[in-house]
Length: 177
Image (cartoon, rainbow, N blue to C red; front, side):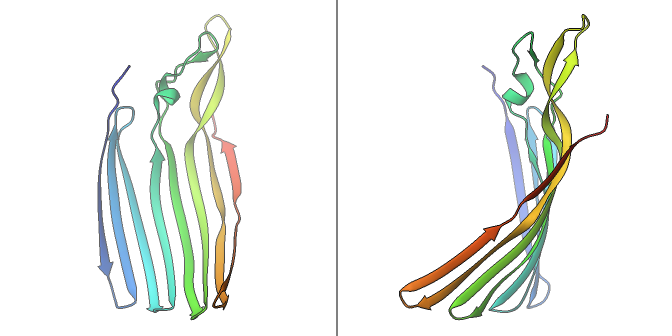
C-alpha cells in the first residue's frame, strides 16, 4: 500500500464591468504526490443585454493527474512501470448563446474547442537484450470540437417539446519524436 496526497485551493471572483457585462476569473492550484504543483486558471465573460438573452465565452485549463495505475502498473516482462508518466493536459475554449425568445420557448447553442497534450499512450520499447516490452507514456496530442444545442417549447399547458443534439469531432495524433 502507499499513501498518495492531493491538495488544492480554488479562488474565484466575479466582476461586474457594466450592467450587461461580467467577468469571472478563477484559479485552482493543485499539488499531488506524482506531479507536484499545477496551476489551473479559468476566465469567463458574459454579456446579458436583457433578461431573455445571454452570450458567454470561457477559457479554462484542466489536467488529469496520474493514478497509481498510470505510474506503477507493471507485469514483467511485458509491461514496465512508467515513473515519468505526466498529467494529461487540456485547454478548453467555449462560446455560446442561451435565450428565451418567448414565454414558452428557450434555446441554447454552444460551440467548444478543446486542446489536449500529453495524452496516455501504450508504447513499445526494447530492453538491453532486444526483448520487447510495453510502457505507458504521454505520446498523444490533439483536439476535439463540436456544437451542443437544445431547445424547449411549451406547446400546450400539458405538453412540452424538447429537442437537442451534440456533435463531437476528434483529431488525435502522435506527438513528434
